Image (cartoon, rainbow, N blue to C red; front, side, top):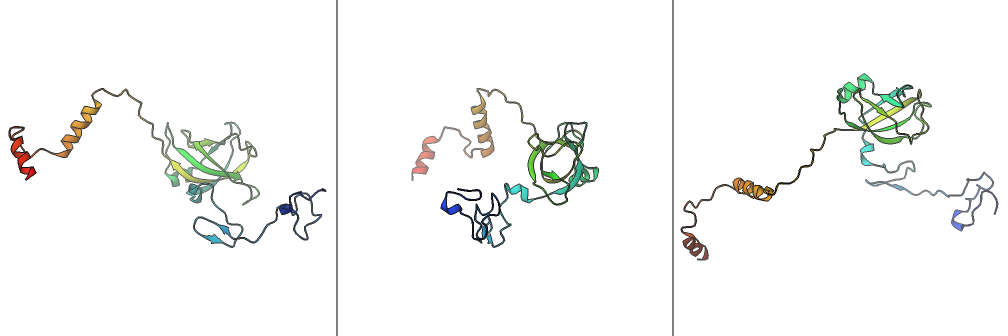
Length: 193
């Protein structure tokens, strides 16, 4: 078998694709509608989202990866005001997509979560290898996730089940019978009849 051909019969080049290079014609493309979650479309450029929250974009901004702070990106002040972000010591999480700013409108979006610093900056993870300090990037913010620390775990009290029952009894209201167990036989006789 030569270059541009496959042994599997379903992967043979399409008519007219012979001799157009190594990958030409190896994977035939047919005019099949692309299905989505809401229906189908004949437009082959439509597809599905990797995660539903990526369909929502809160804001988009351009920034420069800082050279001296280990790949940090500072959210511009206007964007911070738009998203109502304040300087906080234990800041929120951010779901975002990032790609190089040049050429404009081109490039693969990388989707990530990061924790914001006190100054509303976030670090690009190390798996995004195509971006270097000093590069201009385009960022889409999809979601701001408030950070709420979990309470520290405590050892359960041996009286916890009894306290829960007492709370349930108090919430249920009082007993209409004020005579206690003096007239239990009469109450049972009334219920049986």
